[in-house]
Amino acid sequence: MTFDPETLRLDARGLIPAIAQDATSGEVLMMAWMSPESIRRTLETGRVTYWSRSRADFWVKGESSGHVQELVDFRVDCDRDCLLVLVNQTGPACHTNRPSCFYTAVRAGQEVILTEPLDD
Image (cartoon, rainbow, N blue to C red; front, side, top):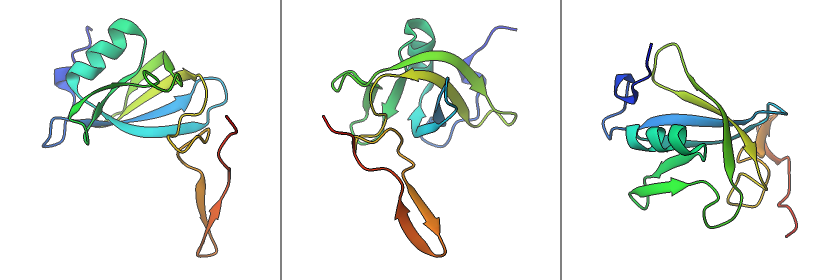
């Protein structure tokens, strides 16, 4: 069966959440939004492309920072309302210069920072 991004369950803005996971370690790196067109671009180029809600434009991960995400596998969840992109991540995935955007844990009611920013 041929994949058609238009068959996905998009939100009212025409977007779908996409979770990026390191293909080697399994670490969850980040969550961002994709549109049908950013999905097409990702699948065509192998460079993960998101939709930036704040800039209202396409965002090729690493285009300005060099911290690129090379697509390894592209998955659709059972409800077709969330995506999982397995990637080879170059450099930190988070704009805070951490390996993952999920660096804060809540333990015993307290926020705990798990990783500090990487040195440049």
